[in-house]
Amino acid sequence: MEYPIGVVLAALVCALAMLTGFDRGRVFYPTLLMVIATYYILFAVMGNSAQALTIESLVASSFLVVAVAGFKKNLWLVVAALAGHGVFDFIHHLFIQNPGVPVWWPGFCLAFDILAGGFLAVLLIRRSRSARTATETAGEYQARLDSYIGDKDPIAMQRQAPRTLAGLIEAAPDEVLSLRPAPGKWSVRAILAHLAEDELVGSWRYRQMIEHSGATLPGFDQDEWARLGDYDSWTAPEALEMFRLLREANLRMFGRLTPEEWRRCGTHAERGRITVEDLARHMAGHDVNHIAQVRRRLERI
Figure (cartoon, one colour):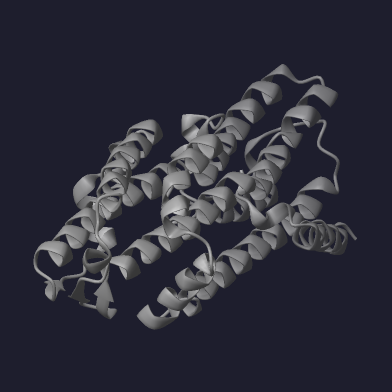
């Protein structure tokens, strides 16, 4: 009976995590792995075996290391570790003599571990597919940014953005700000570095249009810029300060523009003809987009 009970209990735990939102962040399954890995230590204490306690502690420590690595780097490590612990349950008695282990535990834990690992694998695959299907066209992306602005003042929004970001990251530890939510996704500090470098590009585009109305405005590969800029080597305060200083320079310029200069234009590689005013609105919407992204990252921790 231990196998079906393990399957049913794992299904209930994982389903509850999904329904309540516990599994939306990265911490649930690594924590589950850590708890599971320490049960054999408890059994060694119950069996009053010092030798088993030493061996079980060493084995559990290896799973704890993988749980932490999976939380920080890649949750697929946790999938592999849960499956590996299930195999460990099956062959445990061949290598470790632990008198405190209940006779039903290996079968129960094997079933629980394998199903929990399967749930996490399905969750990661679904997230990956959702990310791919959520890809927007340039027009759809711009329409979404425009919707963030509406009738609001984009200049006031631009002025507020660095302050909002400063408030969001003020109490967050560096290990949280540097954590990637999934492979290929940016950490909070990488988002801040991107905002700084995108403001640098915006500075050039504003000035090219003002000085040479009708100028061609090439696009850029943000992932390549992240690689070249080594965003993982930045600190969040450094990136935010760079963003703030570049933004302040542009805000000072806006205060000096004439109505005719606001109407000067360029041809963007993806968005076609845009004016200085259009770009200012775009940058305000871009801020809102990434501020929301930072909030989501921090809420999931």
